[in-house]
Image 1 (cartoon, rainbow, N blue to C red):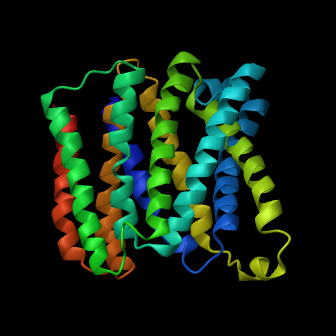
Image 2: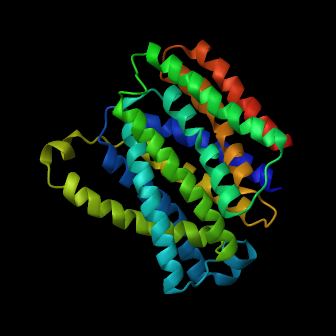
Length: 299
């Protein structure tokens, strides 16, 4: 069941990436990020409020919120700092790079998770899983060759390094999620509520230095419907992902790879919507990534 929950998370992540590209195009990145996280928090907070006033109903429908210790709050704060850094880098890169380049680079995330799962959680891949992971990495390398034809040098473009950094931090957060869900026995909604709240506080500190004091930047910000959509879709994806992680048999290396099937939506649908270049050529490495994910799923 945890694999199917992972696929649901991938579906919502794919839609989330499309809306995110729309939200950041020609827009101020930091307030867009704050808006999306705040929207997601309000979405989860509505269920939190309902659980406060109608606790029996909330428990019966599976969205009760746990009382946690200060130490656990500290662990969640660490996750918020990791993901805030990852999102800041990713949003900036997405603003300056085609979605058909950004999403496949992020698809290398399972490789970092794969290494961490072996070292930290002692997960042991089989032969097909090794092939699947290296096929994903090779396909991302092919994307870099196509990116050069669009005037994007993977060695000289700082936004490429930004998205690589975001990918590494995101993979680190994924490994950390297994600790939060399985070792600390946090349920998805409790983790989502406090994670969003702490991320908002971190972003407010950053924006108070980089955005709020500057009138020109404030005027350049455009509110779009996609900002709300990004927040809600991300919370839906996270819920199914955390729900999958609650299964003690769930392997974080496989879940991370399953989530990468979101690139079908981002590359195929996103390439058409945003009219990006070399869509047909990008289908070749896209196929390679999907075969890699298939090997992971059915190995």
